[in-house]
Length: 340
Image (cartoon, rainbow, N blue to C red; front, top):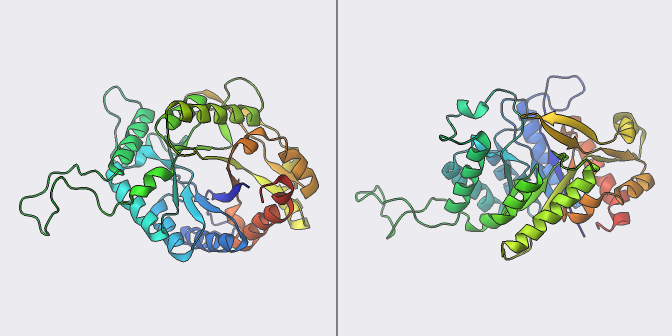
């Protein structure tokens, strides 16, 4: 068995072929899609967070709304850029969303991706400390978030409060202490995957990572996952680590599918430069008739290593079509691969 979720980047634009022409369209359709995905048996609804773009950027209102309208589906992010976050405020927001959902929040966080603007986090009022990089700041923020999420008191009580305080130091409220077990780090390299394991975070690995040895993407990603799992054991962590990988996978079962994604059938891994000219490898998309798709996915080592598969979806094509995309995977592909 494998958990299967969807990952939406939440795009919108005033384009004649888009169903999501405004931010409101994207937000409301995201809720509707999560509800529909739960009804067909999808395990997770995940959303990308990307600032300064016509994409989803404020996850907690959306996650809380989905949590209130669903009952079983996991809801999460992939990923929140921790360079933009106040760790204490985030504890309150994330805890509220988790409590509303009944503990179903799976919070993916990371140092973020290349941005639409230069040092966008500065506009939010955040600066690295002396000697820090922006990546260091992101890691410091997530560690503070995890520390405060433990629920230990840390704030000195006011001797004359508006309302009576409990004895001792004061904790943030609302707080969902169980959420600490459901934090995922989006790792782009082997080293950051190991770091995530050492801090007892689950692992999210997307469709790109640092090209560290020239091997095919899925092989490098599988190696990353195995290093992560070993580091989890070496750290003496209790419980089982979870790992998700993201893929663009389309079963071509009708003419509309072939029109939209038939061209993806010949795609291969790509090499590029990202950020500070780091050599990266981008994983291929999968698009084929179901029988051929099963054969290709059987060879993907990283999917085999992961317990959770996040299917990146074309959210701009509307709720009904995306339900079709997800249903096709559940009906024609997942059973043949032992995912269901």
